[in-house]
Length: 393
Ligand SMILES: C[S@@+](CC[C@H](N)C(=O)[O-])C[C@H]1O[C@@H](n2cnc3c(N)ncnc32)[C@H](O)[C@@H]1O
Image 1 (cartoon, helix red, strand yellow):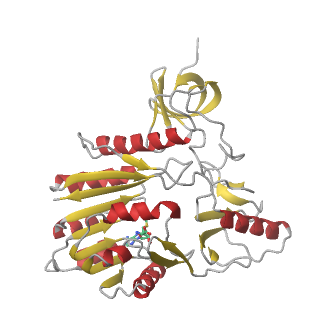
Image 2 (cartoon, rainbow, N blue to C red):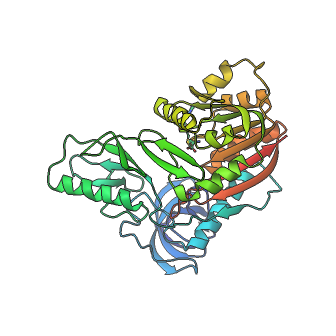
């Protein structure tokens, strides 16, 4: 008699789901299989069972999907970084649109979804200008966490890193090999700008310095201790979409970082307020506005929920509100604070389709309608995707 539930099973991958895993069904189980392509026929090993749901990994590709390619990175499958390298680029883009559609349909209950166009990344490799490197002080490994663990995968070459960050990685590795490195950090945040590499905390000769980058007609200063987007090549179209038709007297930019959207928006409104909780980012935002001579803009250093709910509603009418929260999305009290102000237009920039859909459900239930959904492939070789949703009253 065969063992039930089975330890290994042969399945066909139906499609890719939010989170990037493949969906399959076999032996009464729903399987979530990592690192697969839709249409693959694979023998998988069941790693974990939760009721009738199995989490599985590939033992053997029996018949590869036509969209499967050989992952070029030697760390693929071990490093937790890139989980879409097994897909050709067209299939990566298609999977991301399906992931967004799935979330908007299933979580936000949107029946009639508009077409979702996805903007490809001009660079599919060597695009990352920001990274977080882990350092294991015992093994002296430097790289990224292995998938699903806190073990550090020792990475010599990272194929998605911008060339100057790859050089910084090599420099650090050489210092580690020579034992010439000072007291070790457990992880470092690195960003690249026109003046080189900024690192936080400062380590091994790399300082937490201010760097800058020209994006379209604006110049932004930032550092490793302040958020700045990962893929600079897509920022001009991202800003254009997020601020399209933005005009009026008063705008808000919530979770504004160093002012990526605040600076261009400040040119279109008589007044704008940007809200950011990280004091370093808020200082950079002030500097970026000052350098652009945009005195009508004000940056508030505060948590969005506290600031929104601490403001009187007599505050003037909001013509346009942009929000770009971290992956967790906006807290319920933030959505309530937004709705209390009834902004004429909302532009929601998100790096997580699931939390975006959760928040949209509340905004749509309050009477907003969906104007457009646009996707940007900010993170090639991974399942992550940036989405801009425009809402109007
Ligand atoms: C996804 S980033 C977007 C930043 C900016 N819009 C950009 O595109 O460069 C999210 C930003 O929200 C900030 N943040 C996180 N939680 C916050 C909160 N509760 N209130 C205000 N800002 C917050 C982070 O420091 C970060 O700068």
